Amino acid sequence: MAQAPIRAIDRMFDIIETILMHDGAGVSELAAELNMAKSTIHGHLSTLKNRGYLVQDDSNQYHLSLNFLTLGGSVRQKRTVWNNVEPLLREIAQETGESVNFVVESQGDLAFVGLVHGTDGIRTKVDVGFRTNLHTSPEGKLVLAHLPEARRRELLDELEFPLGNSVGRAAFRAELDELRDEGVAYGTETIVKNVATVSVPVIDNKDVFYGAIVVAGPALRFTQDHLEEVRETLTYKVAKLNIDLTFETQESTVTNQIAT
Amino acid sequence: MAQAPIRAIDRMFDIIETILMHDGAGVSELAAELNMAKSTIHGHLSTLKNRGYLVQDDSNQYHLSLNFLTLGGSVRQKRTVWNNVEPLLREIAQETGESVNFVVESQGDLAFVGLVHGTDGIRTKVDVGFRTNLHTSPEGKLVLAHLPEARRRELLDELEFPLGNSVGRAAFRAELDELRDEGVAYGTETIVKNVATVSVPVIDNKDVFYGAIVVAGPALRFTQDHLEEVRETLTYKVAKLNIDLTFETQESTVTNQIAT
DNA sequence: CTTCAGTATTCGTGATTGCCGAACAGTAAT
DNA sequence: ATTACTGTTCGGCAATCACGAATACTGAAG
Image (cartoon, rainbow over all chains, first blue to last red; front, side):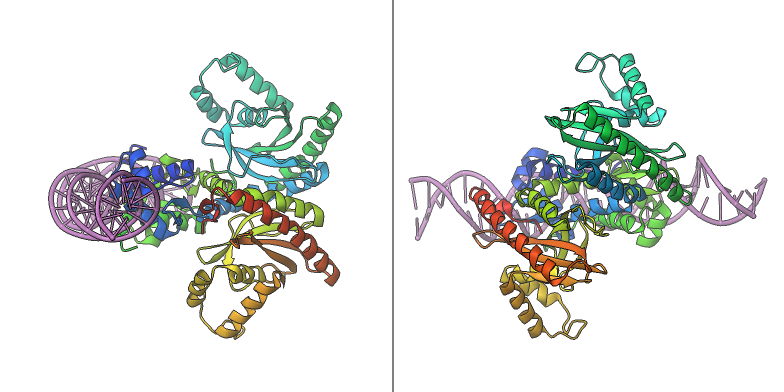
């Protein structure tokens, strides 16, 4: 924390993140934007390229390579929670026909860890790794509501109250409490237009919270009946998962935690 | 290339990759394995942690964070080829009921860019970003066969001939040529046991090759008839895609290339 | 064909800083 | 309390990273 950060690494990530934002960039472009000497940028770029994390296209633009996809895939694969949740997503997708995904809190954001499309599934623009605010969507609020008290405080303290629709701090806390008691969150058109969602938390028998499973579909199809139907299969399936998680947790409680 | 690599960054990636292999590691562990001072490791770890790319669990083990998943997702999302291929995978998965994925050459490996499961889909252990050899699987060979001549030479030169089953260099080249002419590759049990595959290349009308679409299913179900059936829908669908790709390519030929 | 404006790249030098080793602190088990 | 591990901090020297100027390319414009 107090430890002086390694400058070269900080700069490297500045570069990587900038390249990502721009979807490819050249040396001069980066030098200008980041206020660094061209030669410095060049040094970074060529080491990254040698390492295989960057590629240079025909017009000398540098791009992130698929190595990052490999890293990302591995970090997901290694988490035992995901291994338990993934088959479940598929079951739910098959049974409901809708698109299903798994979301967790990560660094104060809502991160989409993985998704499976059902046969009738809508095509969302949300890809793996996508991030959004925790406090603007029902699924985000649900996650927020189930986080350990300490963590939730921390995150709430970073928020500016009142929120957009003039919701005060106290009101928001109340909303979260209610959501937690309900154990399910419904939403319409919050992240993507015309998309309705039903979300339930994933919690093991030791009350460790991992994230939420979200079923998403076209708002039109999600009548009151359908909503209820989806919620039922969802809670039923997830209840089964909770037991499995606990089993797996017996040997290694710690590593089961989702990396934030 | 001749440019001296930045040591700090090389070390950082050594650390990151080691952590990934071990699925979490501590300071001393890394110091021992990488022959570096504990303090050095600590410096790296804490900067990475500050940046949000590493997390430290209750027992002081460091893990890669979901930020890497976000990076990986973005690099995929940004590639316009993927945006065209992804919906196609879903169509094929729905029509055939099998699992479908998209593979490309990346740094001499066969990389799995994305997959979609059909209703009858088997559960493969292959996650996004997974890598394997190019020359051991039918889908890999198919990709190899369709790469630009120059690139293929390069990769073949790195191989040790004769290969395991005593295939000589000339024989292998011949096999690839045949595969390319066929325009389809069939496989059984090569990457995963009891899994049969059918693969076709994705090529636009300017003969730019992007990767291959692979349908995978239980070997038992893939009778001669079923194989042929799958191949038909596959080639039909992919032919349609080729046109779309060309359309999109008109404005930006270069950035359409998959980053290797 | 030359000029020009824009790239990427190389090189050498100086000051910064990343690295080390040793000292410190915290933890769990003996 | 001792032991044997962890992770963390600190100070100082040398290596090395960042810089800016010089060079090499490239392509467009005259």
